[in-house]
Length: 204
Image (cartoon, rainbow, N blue to C red; front, side):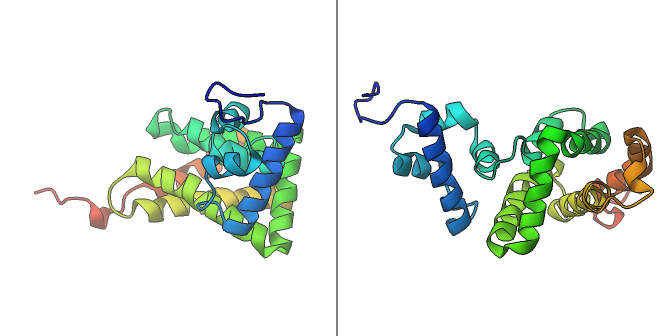
């Protein structure tokens, strides 16, 4: 079937979606997150790039689907960051806990982390995606001195908590109610995002 541009690209169907995911998964694992573009995947899969956007929405969405994630933490955090900056740490923690603890989205995420501990290619891909789509994006929203360092500290705290609670299942953290987790960990997360006083202008 010809598309409106006359280039003869395949239209959308289940087989086409599978073909796109096969190409994307191979390209992500071989070239890394940054090197992959929607256009390059579309070209190899023989589809229009608009079809990839239709199926997966964004590069983050394609990445999550290629690694069989029903939901991508980077996309969740991006939506959370659109709200009030003052309550971002609490909302981010609540939304990410909900994502990891939901049976449908949590199981693939846990499987991905286990795979990353065993396969350096997957570990490198996850690392690159998290740096670019979480740490860099949070840093851009923060601005100011040491924004990337602060964003990295924020993400490291959440990652440690997620591993402790959802993968290692260490007590008492594993059994805490989400509200209790947020009450305890909200303040240090806010502190991680706060610009250091040594970078703040002095007042006279």
